[in-house]
Every structure is written in C-alpha cells, then in structure tokens.
Length: 343
Image (tube, rainbow, N blue to C red; front, top):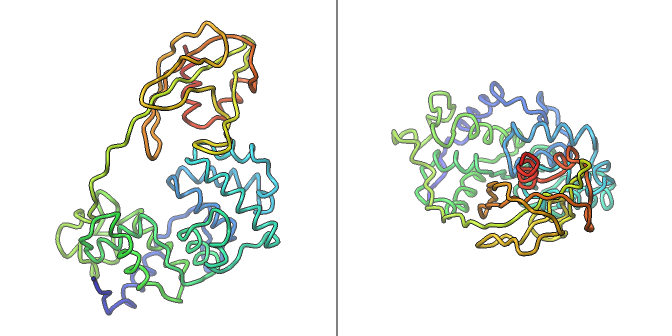
C-alpha cells in the first residue's frame, strides 16, 4: 500500500497557490472567499456528471434563469424540466434532480442540508455529489474524487493498480490530503488541475505546481498513468423509428414509459432496440418510406436506428409542430427526426 508523503503541507500550499492564480472562471463558481449557493453547486455537479464544463455552462445558465432557486425547480412541471435537460445525458438524472429538489423544498424548507450525511439522505444524491456540495458550499473537509482527481492521484503516487480496481486506493490517497483549511478550494483546485494541466493524453508538467511531489513526473513517463484495464467492446443494438407527419407541419410524438431508458421523455414511435431492426409493427397505417439511418452512442451500447417516414393523421399521438419537436426531443430522436424531415 502506497504511503502519503510527509510534506503534505507543502504540497497543499503549492496547489492552493496555483489555484488562486489559475482557477477556471466557471459560471457557477464564486471566488474571493465567498460561499456559493448550495443550489448552484448541486445543480452544476449533477450536470457535470455526464458532460463537460463547456457543454454544461449554457444549460446551467438556462436552468438558473428559469428556476432561480431549488424551490422554483421543485415546483416545475416534469415535462418542462425533461425538455430543458435534453442533450445533457441520462434522463434519469433529470428525474432524480426533480426528486431531490422536491425533497429539499418539502422536508428542509428549501434549504440544503449542510453535512455529507444529510446530503446523502436526499434522493438521487450519491457520495461524490454529497462530498462536493459539503466541501464547496459548506466548507466541510470532504473527500471529493471525480475522474480528474483520480488521474492526479494515480500520477502523483504512481499507482500501479489499473482502473477501475484502483479506485479505493485512489480515494484513500486523496483523503489523506484533505484538511480543514479551504476544503472547497482544495476540491476545486484538484479538479481544475486534472482538467487543465494533468490532462489524460499530454499532461502539461511544465505548468504543474506539483512536479516536485509527483512520482509519475519523476519517472520521466507521466503519460503511463493512470493504468487502465482493457475496456469491453460496447454492444450494438438496432431499431426502427417512424417519423409520421400529418401534412400540416405536425409530427407524431409519443410519451415514453416512466421507467427505462429515456423514461418519461417525449420520443418518436420506435420499435424495441435489439440485435436486429424490426419494422413489422409500424405505429399507424401509412405509405412508409426508407429515409436512411442514424447512429447514437449511449454509455452502455451503440444504437443504429433505421428511419421510416410517412404521412397520415390517424393514431393516438401527441401531434407537435416540427420546430417544437426538435427542441423537445432527446438527442437520439432529434437526429432521427432531422433525417426523416430531410428525406
């Protein structure tokens, strides 16, 4: 088991000094020693679990403009939040977002709990999010470990266990560096270092404040870390999606079941997604035409959708203007709609 160096105070001082000079100007971040709104911290961390800071920023600004407080979000319609979430990844996160906001509003008077334990008791809040909110919003000395922090720890200590098996050891090493002094800044400094300097491909060691402490840098080959186990091949699924138009500019949409992938979201009528496409059961009678296909990658599988287009006004659908459908659909169905409308 790797040990933590004795010069932790020097290491911490070096990184915090670097952060004071180079902190990223993120829209949800508060500088100058002020504590940020816990709602902002929680919302941004949930968004960042599935995307990058650049992609999340406009969503964050749109959410906080439309729902300025957690109580405002708690009172929102599910469909409005789901539509606003479109493009941010798993829609289960949007459902958990609403469940958490409503629990904070209902059980805590619109005020987030200020401890990790209290935050963990909220629906949809896991260990990482609880630690991040506790440290950044409330100044608790919590151990905040995301992918960036894992990479920094793996290089700092030259951890030879490959990911994902190395995660418990990386968390232990990161925990040994946490202190009561500036815990929120410390968490953000580690994440910023991993995002901007200790990068996955080409670490910018010449700009790193921790090279004097870094075992990977001392080895002369810091890119070697973190070690990773081979990834299993992502399975591929196939399906058919139908773009049905009424001839007056409306498109047939459906509401997907609450449970399952893209649960509760608007979608196009589609077959099951399995080993081969199956178009034996179109959603309505029409002169269906082949409009090509679209590709989409989910976390656990890749999807090929064959697109069929047709015209008709029969069927129990949510008839929606095409432009409105474009803005309301999850990315995979928006791709299919675009392909169908262009055919």
